[in-house]
Length: 487
Image 1 (cartoon, rainbow, N blue to C red):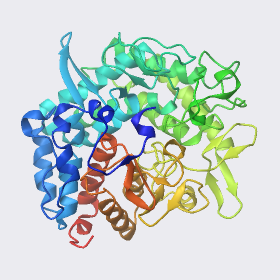
Image 2: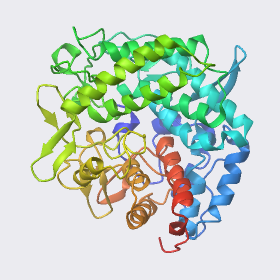
Image 3: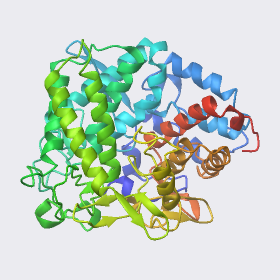
């Protein structure tokens, strides 16, 4: 069982297995984290010589933004968390004359297409200031292209494409180099988001070569196959496990869906299996990134009419399916966005802390933060009408099946703040995050609603960097919040 399935008590003693998963650089500071006197606010970053990558632009931003933060503990959290992806998880090199960046999630030595994009995304606004950082991002785009070409249905990969996975016995078409082969729509959305974000920021198209265009065509082909217009498509997945959300019923294809234009996602961004195959937040994300693909492949330097035509047709079909199936009527709240549907009229309502989620839709550009339908959905997500919204002695927030009942994900609290237009709510969320890091100086995957010192994943770079992104976002849009020493 992976570490993300385990609770790690804040005892100051780590199991040998967990320590073995960490880099030497990060392990250097593990004792300091757990014996920390909070009055000191000692930096929990690895020593400079042990950091995986250093960006002058990010270091300058840390200094600048810390000066805006009146609360010393919050400033300390920001300094620890924002550079965590660069400090501890990136492996940059030049391969065949091109930048190549392998990005692990933290305590699992594998690269998720989703996580690697999400971890790097907060640095995009700084790439014009730092050529070296730009090369790092280009390296992620190149590595993701290689991963998609290896298998567009896989969600996580190894740096060494000859490595055999611990999940090699999964009943699916496993190949060397693949860590896990769980089909998730968002796995193919995130690389397009990263490519588009980098391109819009810099205008640089040097990494968008024939291999990249082939990867874009594979994304379109995979989406099309999983619309399941005439058959179930080539993908199925089964695993021998006692963990229910790791298995897929009916010979690994999932419960039936009625073709309607929406795309089947066998798994959620949490890597948990869906109940109904049409996962609405992920389909809405797909609509957004298909627009990015159309925009990129309509420009002179990237012009590809065939990709544009296929992406436009697919986007229109998903939009139609969403309009006809993705909006449901809640008995108390009225019209809201569904979480999962099957095209037959059945729907499943909940929300999950992982992104894309219903809560995170404005963050992904899928809806405006003041959209009435979204705001109504948000009310339900942040209430006891969402079975995975928890309130406890430590905090309130969204969790999910992945880490079990009564566990809140800091990521959900961060996204609640980023997508909010209410200063009081943003301040409230930041305050929760400040008091639930369990004296470590970092975010975690999840923590128990009644005790933040019971948490999963000491080293989860996505949550750390996302926390930093939230502070950067707040410093730009709501700087007055950070001036409050009592936050």
